[in-house]
Image (cartoon, rainbow, N blue to C red):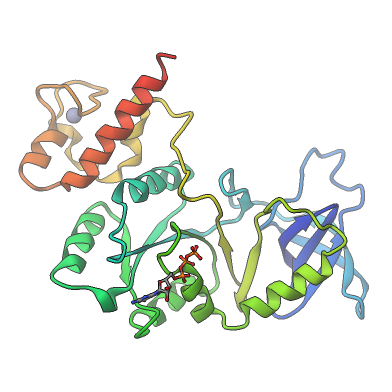
Length: 292
Ligand SMILES: Nc1nc2c(ncn2[C@@H]2O[C@H](COP(=O)(O)OP(=O)(O)OP(=O)(O)O)[C@@H](O)[C@H]2O)c(=O)[nH]1
Ligand SMILES: [Zn+2]
């Protein structure tokens, strides 16, 4: 049988068959010599030991498409980041940091602005413009009047998605919409793993539809772009590339250089001010950090 590891704790791996069943598996011996440790998100071949008890043993980890460090997970197809469009207003600095982290790990991102039912004025146009111009998929949703939720469901279908976003933006409300019995399933898993009883929060995937999984990511607000060279940062702002032809110096970082295509594009309104400002902030942070 094949399935996906949705959680690992205390030597047990919980393998979902993609449809409805969850097996409590061990990984006996096979990986020790190969120096490979099963990760949440891994697709595996496993043998069923007891069909009643739903126990099994993992025989093989199938080749990984990718393996993210943060959050630790394999085979992530995309990230969905949720911010509220208002109440509270989105923290674009935090959003841009998240985008850098995902660009760095080559994970496509869908940006969801929630609470559009509270939206006044042209906020949707504004934010849509900033992020579509930067090359991202943007959805506007409301878990209250259900706008945009079908489009979100379509985007998730058949994929493994990491869900992220700061507190209070409506992530729980969205998760409940996408998977009304999520709470039940969580309860079921926690009952099964009770013997593990670790308090540390491990990453876990939730099965939300056939071959469709989602992972909630803790600790979003403390996210920091570390261990990155300042000069490398520009590579993770994908919209800059189109204007780098206009930079005089090879390796232009678009900060203090006089002849710079990116700064030129900015002054012509072809790049979003907020994106560039957040680039500068992160750039300075990374520069300063290196002096210590
Ligand atoms: N008006 C409006 N309110 C919403 C919407 N979605 C969520 N809310 C409200 O926003 C608040 C936060 O929603 P949650 O779903 O708990 O947000 P969360 O992101 O899970 O927050 P944490 O649990 O703190 O991580 C609640 O009071 C929700 O009722 C929406 O689409 N429109
Ligand atoms: Zn430049």
